[in-house]
Image (cartoon, rainbow, N blue to C red; front, side, top):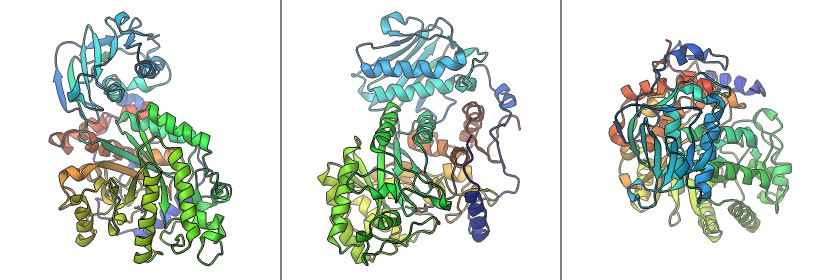
Length: 548
Ligand code: TNX
């Protein structure tokens, strides 16, 4: 995989020196990374021929093993409801997943012609399955996936995929056999919001790179992709009415690289691709701080009328839009209008974090003016939890990114907003931030929230996490991946894996299944799959990886 620069690694190690001792996680000296060249064969050999039903991530809500397995063969057909466009697309998607490694033709046919095969069945009357639930029945006579909605079939396809040997993820024909354990899985998500955030502002990532991340998220049933599209170091989304935001404001990134931005058509392509994986994209334009790229692009947005230079460092909290100036709100109106028009999803994220250069009074004034603009263009607000220092708009979600040591008063302010009806998305920095170092020896990442080893990242309960917040105010969880120190896909992989699947499991699986001892075994069993998919991952000593 492409290696872009070495500068961020250097920044990472400088920060490591600067922050050593801050961490609160378990630091171990013998942590190692699996390179892309890691020999997957030993690990793959450790896989049983039939993966026990339900031994997947996230663990399903209900699993009843029964009878003999199903065996996928050269004769297998995939049956869909040919009257449904989405059902046919799902059939093609499943066939596309299974063909390269099996080498089987796997024709997608109408259900009636798929006896003995894999059937994808939409059953609108199956209300208990909800918006994303599914049932999988497997036995020698076939596999049937049933869901009320196409999204449920898509989640079920991920289960089916994980029940097959990991070699199914490879791009060339593998030996097989391709068996799926017999029995029934009935599965619905614990939370409606299961998110991942990618910061494409600190380092730019191309459309193809974002698509690759979307595919990784899909495997773990993530349904929300939050894109951090603007920050001090770069503006990454075309806005026709303010073109210099991208032509100038998008022209660099941390470390001084070339940056980049998405044209509207490219952005639509990301949104379409995410939708094909049943993920809703939430675009974030971070306001009023984190705006140096915009301030550098347009002098009139600055209170003193002077544009600052572009910024390629990694400090936060030094920039602010000019709250008293009317042009600020023309700018924000234009940006929100154009981005809302690119967004089929329900939400726009307006940031609101670390506005250290904005006075509290100005911050409140700003948010009071800007939140209605989001509603004006038909969207709901998402904001980082600092938004609870103002009056969150009706229907807003706030994203909590505090840590264990966050002052109780700040936690209580967020909890009070939650008691008042504001929905919470939990992204505690010392649990779910994928850019935090695992240990003091992790070459990449930051450590301001401490070290976050795999167990720490998994071992918490979203429902009881924030004292005083009602359990039903918690809409779900999100794993943010900030990219100050991450410049390549390999960098993203090794920070996201294997923590991302743990956050995904917190979002999907029932609380009753939460158990580190069994989770770590299922996680370890994902290793050959990571390897087959070309995912670089951190071989945490906390996890009993195969072959060790
Ligand atoms: C905090 S948490 C930030 C980001 C940084 C991140 C690095 C939050 C809403 N803001 O600006 O990139 O830490 O870990």
